[in-house]
Structure formats: C-alpha cells, structure tokens
Image (tube, rainbow, N blue to C red; front, side, top):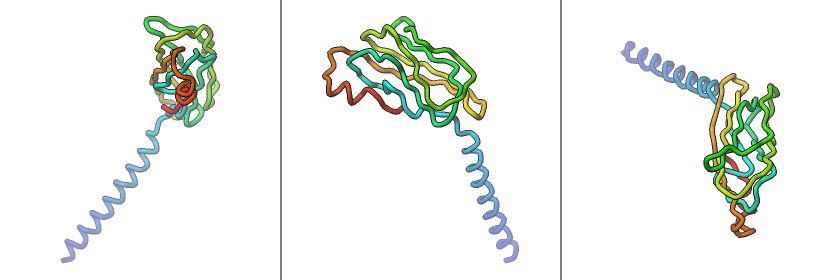
Length: 139
C-alpha cells in the first residue's frame, strides 16, 4: 500500500512540474505579433491610402516593409532603422486602384525575427459606407 501512495504522490508532482514547465516555455516562445493594420487585412477601400499603419503587441525593429502590387513593388518611404517601437506609419505615395500585399518583418525584444504579410484592395467603385467599415482592422 505504501508503494502505491508513493507512486501517486510522485506522479502528481511530475504532472505539476510538467504543467509549470509548459507555462514557462509558452511565455518564453511568445513572439511579437501584428495587432492592427490600416488598411486592414482583406480591406476594400475607395482611395489609395497615403500611408500604412502597423501596430505590434510590443516594441519591435521593423526591418522589412514591402508593398507589392500585382507584378510590381510600390514605392514607400520605408527605411530600416534600429529604433524599437510598437507603431509605425509608412507613407505610400502614388497608390492606385488594385490589389496589394504588405510584406513585413520585425525583430522582437526576444531577438527573433517574425515575418508575415496581408492584403487589401483599392477599388474606386466600392460603396462609400463599405469603404469606411473595412479601412482598418486587425491581423
């Protein structure tokens, strides 16, 4: 009987240790995430935006921002720098109607590089009430 009580106690301690370890490792591997983008992912807007806003869940170094139209890269004022911050505004001169993909990469406080992309559409024929609803959003 003593042996089974000892085994049950040992097993309980092992389970607690494993759960605690998983909680710590989940926190340690939590990477930086894009929390908001304007225009947002999947947005359909009436006019080309004068700038793109990206907001992250903590200070990051934005090391890549590429705005791609269909078959070509659009000009932006993006310049990589070493200043870490949570929000960025990148000017986008010369936007025109079409489908666009924003490719971005950041280095978070943990030193890991995180990259992702999202898309939006500039469509002058979109109804005004729908354009305002989808102009910003989270990714």
